[in-house]
Image 1 (spheres, one colour):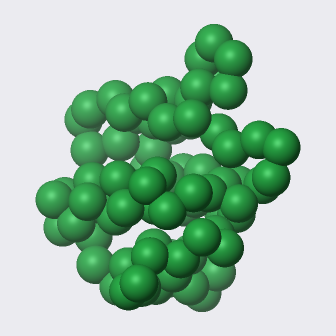
Image 2: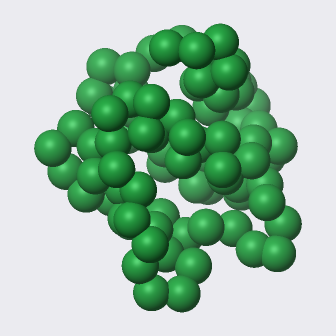
Length: 84
C-alpha cells in the first residue's frame, strides 16, 4: 500500500473525526484495498469491497467528506480488519 493510502487510513481513524478528507482520496483507498467503485444515481456511489456492497453519497459542492460519512467508512473498515 502506498504512503498516500496509509495517510488516508490514518485520517479516517483519527479522533476526533476529521472533516478534511477528500472523498476522492477515500475512493482511491477503496480501490487500493481491492474494491470497485461504481457510479449510481445522483451523487451515490456503490463500493464493492470485502464481498459486500456499500452505498455512499459523494459530497458536493465541497470535495470534503462529512464527519458522519467518515465515521461510517471507519466503522466498515474496522469491522473488516483494516487498521492504521
